[in-house]
Image 1 (tube, rainbow, N blue to C red):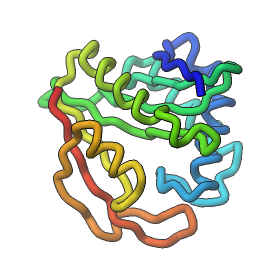
Image 2 (cartoon, rainbow, N blue to C red):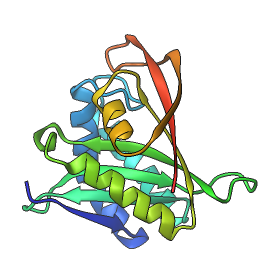
Image 3 (cartoon, rainbow, N blue to C red):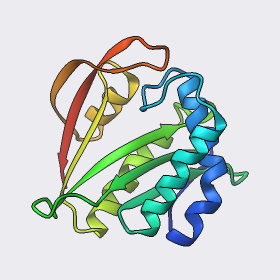
Length: 173
């Protein structure tokens, strides 16, 4: 799959909401524990992405998207840069999502490389993220140079309501 990764600016973020909502809904329907329960309504997904677009406009987060050759959004990741004043060097990586039709084609790996570049551009050199313990993303992060810190059992719920553990990672750039 020919995919391009781009940083979405404040003026463009609102225009991406429909495509981002499609990716989020697909991920939740596919069983990803990404803060939402199944079934995820289109309205709830759109409201979430409107909030993200507002955060981009306020300069609180960086939004990256992966577009396929037809210009459809097939993946995304965010860098949350608005943190307390004693953490100006740090950012959180959030909502690394890849549509099921684009998985196992290197999209997630490219998004993670792009988030590293975005973090450097923002002057951030310590990154933190969390993911479902034992999931595919956990292996991806390990291969991408992220260091596991530990697991919290029953930290969150899967979209079907089953509890899951969460593993926390950090990366120094």
